[in-house]
Length: 91
Image (cartoon, rainbow, N blue to C red):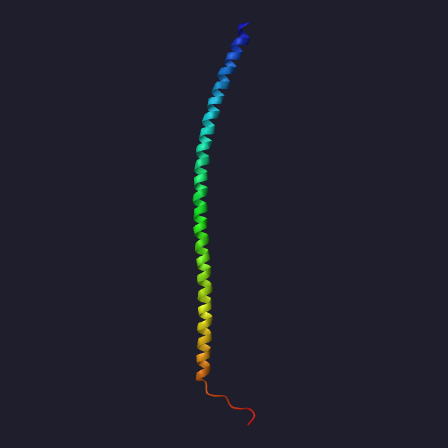
């Protein structure tokens, strides 16, 4: 008759221990979740900065390319003005 009561108490003690372990595990996971959220936020911030830098790089590249084309056109126009006039083929 006491055996079932003793078994019941043993189960309660085991369940209490398991519950405490689960609570500890949940608290640990919660802390890890906060750390991961913080890491993700830092990564997101760095990605935003990288995206801005890439945009500026693209704008600078386009501007530099346009300047290079304009300088080349300018050099070609100056070169054409210095050439002696061509001979007429009609004469």
